[in-house]
Image 1 (cartoon, rainbow, N blue to C red):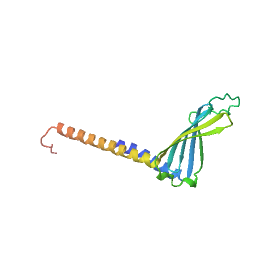
Image 2: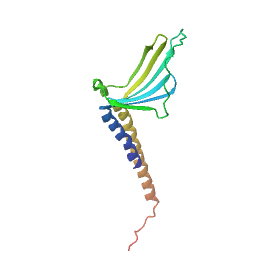
Image 3: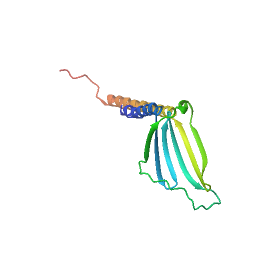
Image 4: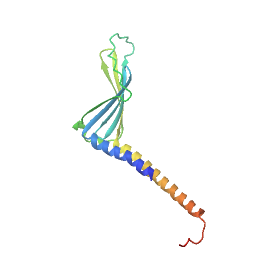
Length: 160
């Protein structure tokens, strides 16, 4: 049953990530343009995907642009630090979508858009798909064996 064993790997990874994220916060930052970053944040048994960008306020033409964010390599910049105990019960919540604006100087807006997905929800979405795929493969195998059994000639078994 290869689907069972291959499908077991994401289950183990999700369980390990949930346990590890309760003690540590892992953050990956990916920057491909000078004023925008994308990030992954794994902490408190949840995965947060976020985008941060600097936008010039409408009607302003500032010469004091914020410092460009240094570009990262394709695999990004990874950081690991102790998890915040403030959000210890965050794993009980459902998905959250947040947006927020802050100001950088007088002419720039720092915009953040994020989606937080609890790992239990990823696990709950993955588990039925894995069980269904394993069931489908077992059903297909049993049909193949039945078909192969019908194709064998009927008769006495050979005696030694």
